[in-house]
Length: 394
Image (cartoon, rainbow, N blue to C red; front, side):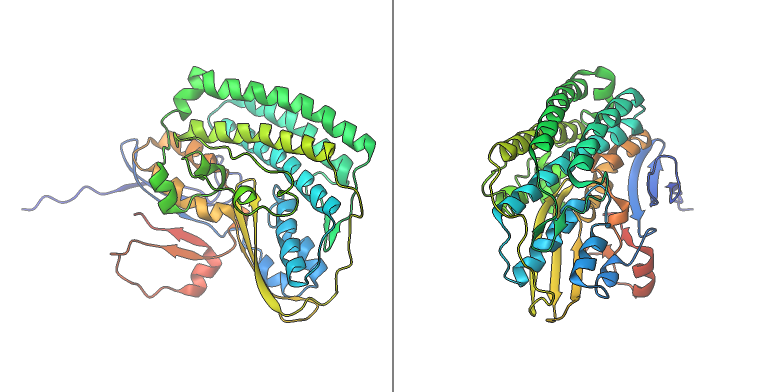
């Protein structure tokens, strides 16, 4: 009598779970405590933003797309504005472009500090969580003083920005940066020297350079594995040609490296902001933008806090976008989570998941990834569109 294969034991997590800040469904195949396979399904917060943009004017669409992600709201509006301005052949004043970068780097500070708190919370380090979120209030106060809002800043308009920087705001930002720089030094010391913390991060979730390239990892997730890719460096946009970015990378590819890269990016963002405030261009902050954008299509790429954000924008020559397609960095990085999860303990999963700084709400589209030798199936595309993304075990 043939010996039957042991049954797989599957541990489901989500879509509602204390370890998840947004809804997502994960299934981990385990052998004891060791993960042997992982799948994920998203799409529980599908909002139809891309379709909604097609029924609104160019100005309305920008404010709608700004709400794809609350943490990256400015960079989404910037990506859309740069694409629309390119189609309209509009040249934005240098001062407006500098202010776009200024707000974008403040947003990067906010995003990385928020992520730091969430990531360490998943490992039970709630003191560092409280510290980082307390210090994050400094950035939110600076953004509120500059734009009037703490989350969706609405600093952009088509053709420039709606806010300027006066002397008082400049001084407030510089004072806030001094405090944040000191706090970032403390964060870096903790994540690289605390033995208990290193036990949860060093050598955990390691992704090699080859794996990162194969899986298409972007942003700090890819740069922590040695991938030298940053849109601000490769294809500078807005004011980045005048304020170059120093690329921050690591070669270890584990969770510790992802913490180090993001915290070092805090220092780089602070340096860029100071340089912009010191060398702020003079002149106007807006230029005239036509109500009807000429017919055409374009790609707009920017570096969001989580990585490359890509917008495909098509105009039919009217007062509304004909098509807007958004590809967020979270979509690119999910494959790395499910690949690096295999071989680790189930208790490591929350940290590995949070290590890419995931944004579930960004994933409002469907995709299938399967092995080349997996037999083709008659996919129910309508069901997939509604239920989001499903990654199959490699």
